[in-house]
Amino acid sequence: MKMTSRVIRLILSTILLVFSQLGLAQNPTQDSIHRVLTSIKEDSIKVNILNRMSENFLGSGDTANALKTANDALLLAQRVHFKNGISKSYANIGYIYANQGRFTEALKIFEIVNDKESMGGCYIGIGGNLVSEKKYEEGLKYYQKALKLFETLKYSTGLALCYSNIGDVYFIQLNYNEALSNYSKALRINNEIQDQPEIADVSEKIAITYERQGNITEGISNHLAALKIFEALKDEMNAATSYHELGNDDAMLGNFAEALLNQNNALLLSKDIRDSVGQIKSISGIAFIYERQGNTTEALKYYSQALSLHPELTAVKEAAFIYQRLGLLHESEKNYQAALQEQETALKLYRTVEDEKGIGDVYNNKGCIFLDEQKYSEAISSFDVAIKTFTAIKFKQGMGSAQSNMGRAYMHQGFFQQALDNYLPALKLFEEIGDKWNMATAYGNIGFAYKRLKNLELANAYFTKGLGLANEIKASGVSDLIKRQMDAP
View 1 (spheres, rainbow, N blue to C red):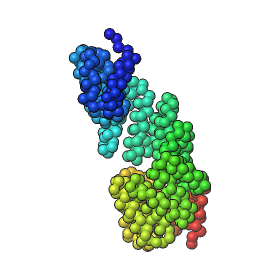
View 2: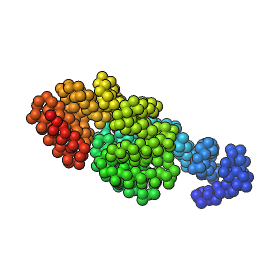
View 3: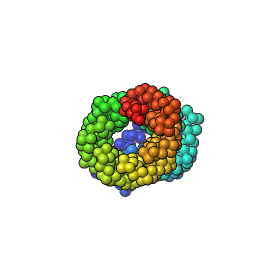
View 4: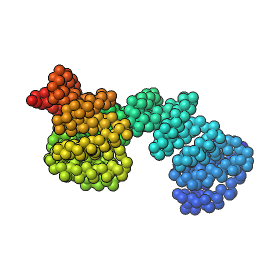
């Protein structure tokens, strides 16, 4: 007899009613399931019921009962030679394995039933597991295998996910151009199929990638695109993250009023949803704005407020960042001992989470503190560690910053050619990533080095470049610095 889904639902509801009468509706045990099912005839109807029950168990998160019931369905389907039931049982087992993260086992099941879309999903799952183990090249191979399969199926959702995941790997590897290329492909497909959550997610990834390249304007544009969707979807957590990132970007550009507005919006949303990590990020973001404005009192107040939420327990990287900034504030007040202590605290935290970029930042900061103290050998040693750390992870912005600081250390000692030998490669790194703020600063530093070397023609050429670029990006602080370098005797 042909079994309709409506009849199966009716029988299934009857079984659940029996469970309810037995007081077992929420957590039926295998014994209780067995007692109820023994009265049902061993045929295709029972196979379909078992498979539907397996799906219900999986939907409720009970993978143990889901797997047991699916295996029972498979054995019965094989005994009664019910082909559709065999395929469905295998598929359910595959879905359960995938739900448990057992993608290799799930793949074997989906290969049996020739479910190509699910096979592609398993390739992505296997790739994700490898990436989490830092086996990036192996992970990429599985993502690309899924990509090829989805291309033959013309499965847009799967293609977009593959491109996004491939972009993630390149981002981790600091290959930002390849990351942007893949994210852009994912965004195009998601726009075609109007997958709003994915459009927002990929837009955020694009924004962060542009920021890593020093292109803050493009970062803001993509954060705004993501924010618009998050707000329409009433996704408060991600909307708060977008506001926070916008606040950081505006602070970097000197748009302090807009920056405060964005960080306060992020803070309000984080409080509404009781997201302590979001609150920590927003409060430290407000502190960073005051720091950029030179308001040390308010900056210290907000950094202390963020620390009172114990970020070292829930947001280690954010805690490390706060200690870094506190160190720089102490440095600005010439309290060098306290500054170094804060940097050491940040260093310990970054090491616990193996954050190489954070570790490099700390050594770069320590070098600057030693430089202020005129401890040149310690400064050069710290900058050297920073350069090596950033080089190992191919973080060009960090490499350029540390190398530029190394140039400053030589300038302070009157070694102008050695300074130039560091400023020039730093400039090249900033040019490669399009970091205009640091490019303008580097032009000024190079001009000043040439001035000290009595090469006034080159000095003026670099000063002119620096002023032009600083004015273009409205970096008044950089313009003022270059003018002081030009006016120096």
